[in-house]
Image (cartoon, rainbow, N blue to C red; front, top):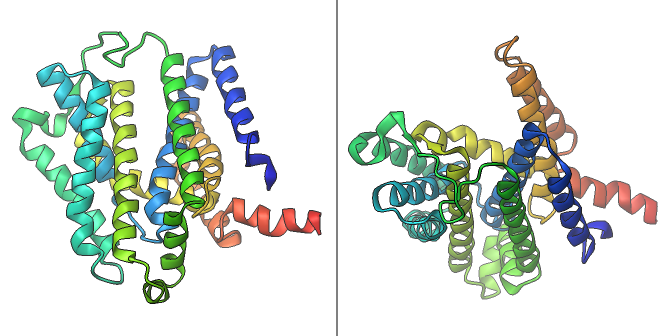
Length: 319
């Protein structure tokens, strides 16, 4: 599907940037920020879950590490969130090694279960050390607009930063797909024993993929904390966040650079619109509708929308 290859995706990004400049509606800008960050989060998860085939339902751990690291440095030490992002990303990399080194030596669902437990342990720790972290109440950031504080009076700058994350993660995904690491990850995903027989260090490849994934996820968590000016453990380390971004990638097309883009552009607006227009009058109905859509897509198109289009629809047209 050549539209999203080469310079075409760059044109797509430019059009989105122009749309940000033109749109005046605050809710639409918020929706765009949500979509762009969802794409970036999907790409971050895709490095380990899509290319590496290691299913994670605990990526909220890295997201929360990023959010809390940058926020706590900002609140207690006055460190600019731009540096806090990097610190959060590096701390998430260390956490990914603590998680990955023992888990990747085992087979089966150990890694998946460990990611869920890891996120929950971090949530409990944040609640316990309430004098420093704000506990279950969370932390409300004092609004002090400025570039160094990563706070702005309107949403356009946030939208452009989120679009930058989307572009960064997309092109990094394309690079990985066409790199030696990408080929190794694909091989171990298809047949890990066969990949080992060919001399591929599958353990090292999985660790690298997890570190990249954790670093990017933490960056986005830091950014979103500044955007909302509020953090609390139930949101930052929630299982729902982890499952939501996983399902979004699966619906768009797992293991491809375009999968997270398609998934986020479909699922995130659906979530937000249902939350705004339905949840108030019919509490819980939005979750039922959202769940039904997910079930239908997963059953009817298990390979994801992108792969279904490229392998079925597009191939028929070019045949």
